[in-house]
Amino acid sequence: MNFAFPRNNNSEMLLYIWKIIDLPSISFDDLFYQISFDLYLLSPDKAINFINTCIDKKLIIKENNKFR
Image (tube, rainbow, N blue to C red; front, side, top):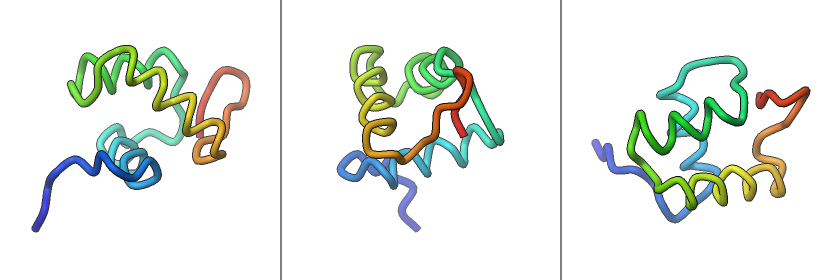
């Protein structure tokens, strides 16, 4: 099994993170904090860019400052 973090594909990377977080929805700040400081997957600047890219590509849906 390969447990490596999939850095080359945004959709796979988001799925990987979402499976770890295991919540139906999460706020932007909490998602940012989880990626940068709890999981240590991306630096804060890269985490913000990653989240914004996922929003732009419609990989996550933003509703009332929550993602699902």
